[in-house]
Amino acid sequence: MAPATSPRYTPFLLVLLLSAIMVTSETLIKETHMTFYLQDWVTGKNATALPVAGRNKTSKPTEFGTVVVIDDAVTAGPKRSSPQVGRAQGTYVNSMLDGTDVHLIFSIIFTNAKYNGSTLEIQGADRFSLNQREVSVVSGTGAFRFVRGYVVLSTVFFRNLNAVVQCNVTIRHY
Ligand SMILES: *[C@@H]1O[C@H](CO)[C@@H](O)[C@H](O)[C@H]1NC(C)=O
Ligand SMILES: *[C@@H]1O[C@H](CO)[C@@H](O)[C@H](O)[C@H]1NC(C)=O
Ligand SMILES: *[C@@H]1O[C@H](CO)[C@@H](O)[C@H](O)[C@H]1NC(C)=O
Image 1 (cartoon, protein in one colour):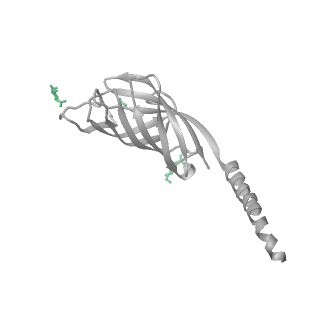
Image 2 (cartoon, rainbow, N blue to C red; image 1 turned 60 degrees about the horizontal axis):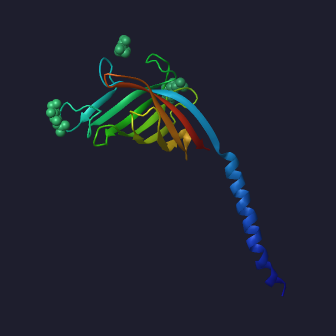
Image 3 (tube, rainbow, N blue to C red; image 1 turned 180 degrees about the vertical axis):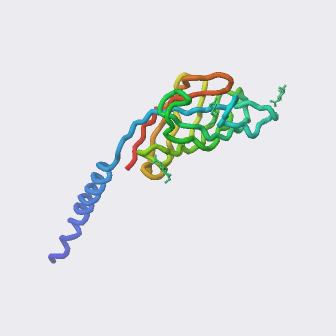
């Protein structure tokens, strides 16, 4: 008769065990905030953002259909000469018929001492004429494994298609 009572305890023990696991994993999640600047130079000397395809041979990033490949410097401050903390490598594609939005898909590859070699994967709609817009951090590597979060973008400089974009990052990771 005695063994018949034991199954009643099983769900209780299971719940206890599961909540212990959940508490453990939650205490390990960190929230990190970072601010840096994307140096998106399309024209002039040392351009790092190159339109590679579009509806016309001379298509600009501000025209629908233009594909831009980037290897932009990511800097600690807004100046182009500010210390570099990483590179933004990948693409953006103008994907709004009236030309006012680019779809970003790139990695931020950190080169600073703290996060050297770690990456954040950025994706989202960048309606660049707005003062602020938000894109996703969809994944990451190294220090940012299992990362999720978002980046608030604001353009601090824009001339001749060249832009410096402030990136305010909020991420949760282990
Ligand atoms: C371009 O790069 C060269 C070599 O690194 C540098 O001397 C020059 O100042 C740069 N020009 C601009 C406009 O950044
Ligand atoms: C291609 O460029 C020409 C000249 O700038 C322009 O008139 C035309 O509308 C462009 N075509 C497309 C599809 O953007
Ligand atoms: C980052 O890692 C690379 C490759 O391991 C190394 O050459 C470089 O010196 C490192 N940079 C910093 C700032 O630690």
